[in-house]
Image 1 (tube, rainbow, N blue to C red):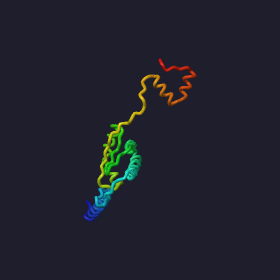
Image 2: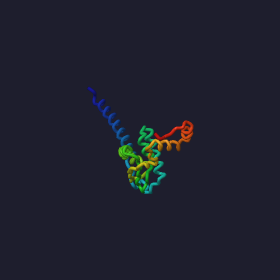
Image 3: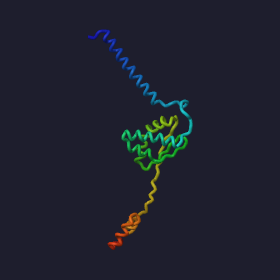
Image 4: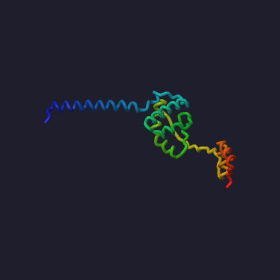
Length: 163
């Protein structure tokens, strides 16, 4: 059975360990706490500031092997006052964006040193500028425009596209 002095020393050691852990946790909590409005500037955000902050977030995501998220953040965005609206190209990007939105909002708030920030997404339909090719002749003529050697080969070998 341990003596009273041995028990006292063990209790003191454990109390020291607990207080060290609490101090470390408190320091970490202070890093994560939002800075009060009085500590932050109420200036408007600029596109350049947002781009720089996004570049830092993209680098961090790449380091964490989160390539899909970093690709989403490379999309265009629209900045209005304190709202950043990302232009997304599909449902998959929107799903992933919604999952990372809270983390992204916290990171951008800290990097931009702002208290209020809204992050939204908008779906953008990709414009399909390619012509619709239905027949073999249309397809072949389109390819001839892209590669001139096809015209030469057609003449040399006497090829016809009509079947």
